[in-house]
View 1 (cartoon, rainbow, N blue to C red):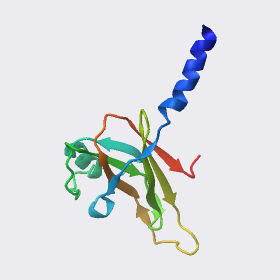
View 2 (cartoon, helix red, strand yellow; view 1 turned 180 degrees about the vertical axis):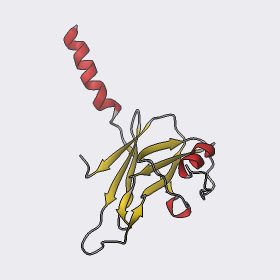
View 3 (cartoon, rainbow, N blue to C red; view 1 turned 120 degrees about the vertical axis):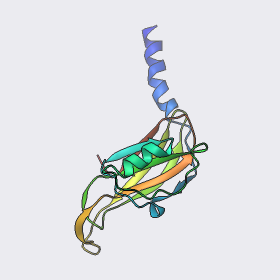
Length: 143
């Protein structure tokens, strides 16, 4: 009985995170004027919390129209960085059986593209079709 229970538990994790299919998404970053100060992933199902996140000091942020009845907004931010050469790229969004995974790659300065030395807050704001599944982020190239 114990072996069967352990086998069931061991099988559940790969099953839950399997069955991945690409999920369409829309990038709104270039139409958004804001500087999120919190690093990580945030999921928004209404406009007010998104506006508060993008303008924490009360300044107004420019957020493009989003139909929150049909779409969910996902904000991915790396936190403060020291150069304008830092940027985030969404490489894929996958819908698995029990979750949605947003894969992000952070591009860093190089000798060829050092950027300007200034405080920046790289982020991506995307929308996906509304779903009840939890959203997680997978940072490519990070431990």
